[in-house]
Image (cartoon, rainbow, N blue to C red; front, side, top):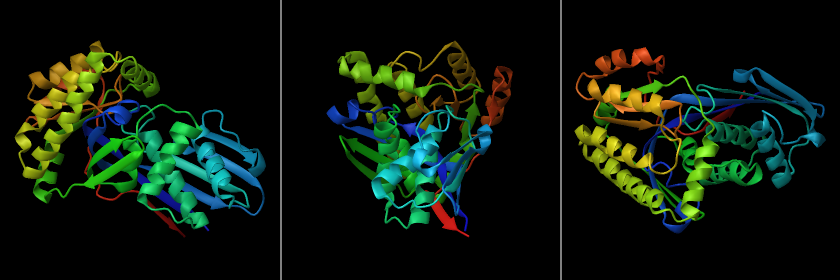
Length: 338
């Protein structure tokens, strides 16, 4: 028997950072994101002995242990952490297994790779062990594994995006999360796919450092950072209205509005290279853009209306990054066995 699962990565369109505690606990957060056809994959093969093999194919890293001695250390701590958490919680794993993973984007690229991978792994175990987990259950378990069990800094949007899929307006307050799926007309989806440009800066970053500073700024009640997050929450509502009503021409302006405030949340969100890329894109026809994720590197998205995407692409080639064609993905995590 082979069990497989895949979960989609996401691009954050508005409200990024307001899903992170303590801001979301005190003020409530709001995010708008959309999943794309880039995925995290997991393959789980049960064994007849107690040997456990963890294999991150994209990183060319493998580790072998036995069921009773799984630890949560090292480069494969996410793979091992999910297995250890599920065994502690459900006590249903009675044999060894081989768990192999692959992600279509590099770690630290700003598309929610670690959380999406966590969701895919949980889904594969749920399929194997017949765990009665709904969408909210899977997303919450992924959050618990990353943030509480493994102590990895971050917010909540990525786990819910990967689980639910599609365009979602998400609201956060304390432990409560509400996912509002958006019914976006097909012609609006097609136009946004044509106009959005996904650009990889060819750099990655440790998002936890930026997120920890963001959390510290809220705890210290720094008005500049908190006010910026209030504006980003407003941005998510603006973006939702624009997409649902088909007022697509203002998407770039809304992105630019958010980007100006996002940079005020914490140091390191932008730098001279990112600023140079952004300025070049705007000068050549993009009407707005942002870093996808916490900031500091990874993917950037730009909105290029009419026929400006090609001029923007030409201008950005000198920065040494690469462009990633994508389509929006309506499905969330899926698992199956063969």
